[in-house]
Length: 418
Image 1 (tube, one colour):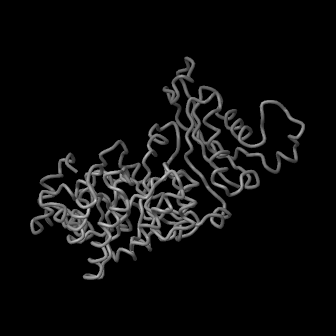
Image 2 (cartoon, helix red, strand yellow):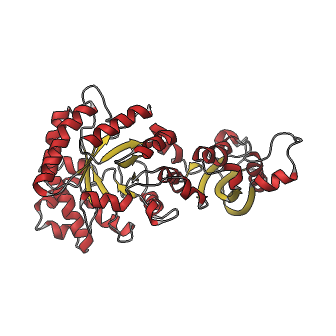
């Protein structure tokens, strides 16, 4: 069985709507049909397994559906779908178990809050190629997070200027650099030219030091063949990572890429917020991320503590737990990418939120490249902050003997500049 958990909100009967979801999304239709036999229903019909009431609400998530009501019943409902009815195709799963429920009348709110898949899905999909262990092995990092940054400004910087900044970051000891998700192959910075400017610096540094900095080039494209050509260009030049905008390329684009990929696939979830931001509608991240992990991403951006956008800290904690929890085995765990307004100041709270784990990529944009001492000093400041956090030393105390961290605290501590 495939189990979906729906959070239903309605001025009417939760039980009736749960039964309607099970019927409409499997064997039911608007009128009785000759082929709708009891044997067919027993074999492929969805079934309501459990209804767990929640506190009612006085506000509708879909206000236009309230029709004057002021009291809305709420419950979490488990519905099982037989594997025979859906199979292991993820587009079928999205269509049948998720897509259609939002169109059902009578609900003022519906959110998918849980999904449990049977083992057959593990065999049907490749999952991560590199994941947590591969990411750490390729960067040579141990016993601390991978420290990364984003090339800023995201738009307008030409390849040669980008390479200059990358060189400074490499010299400062950064582990990971990525193209901003908005940077793919525009006229002022074609991917071919960026690769040609950046990769020699990375390879030269590897020759001198033995450390190969991971650079994630933006290869996303609506045409899977063009995206694959972008991938091949990066791989041929000696690169080992790519940014993929997963909502933009879709299930099919990622499946096509993963089957042929030799790069670490760094998933950016831009566009995700529209699917989850309303608490009574859409998805929980714990559900949505399962699709992309099965399809094969290796690293997953999940925001962080005290981010610059709307997401609260408790949502970050749930997202971290989701991507860090095996679906079927440890091999399908992906690397959590902690980002959005991060600088060293969130390191102590982040390590508490992760239960002491440092299995993450800590991604800072302005928190590194806007450091008063320059991007190089920004890298050192973030590393110093994590040294303090892992050792349990307050940042202010550690900063007394680490000037880069001291400068970082002075600039970013008000939470506005990073």
